[in-house]
Length: 75
Image (cartoon, rainbow, N blue to C red; front, side, top):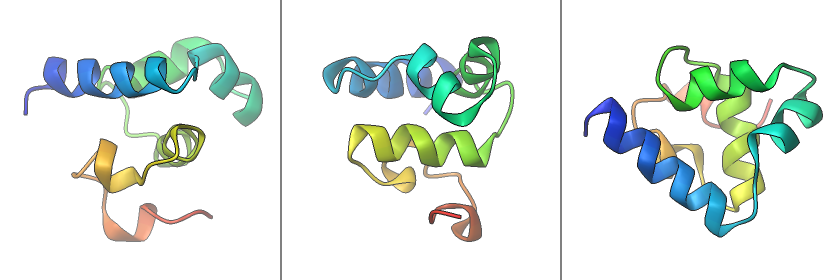
């Protein structure tokens, strides 16, 4: 899957579940731009990946199969 396809997949799941970049940024005390960078594949941001997956009610592996196993579970 390309980075663009990955982005579109994750964004569609977020939209379907009413999850916004702003919501995740506020919850995790980071800037919205950082959340976008993770979605766009510019950063790995494993903690943010977990927050997004949790907010969407799916696993990290469902959204980002490339996430190392040790970073897939809640910290």
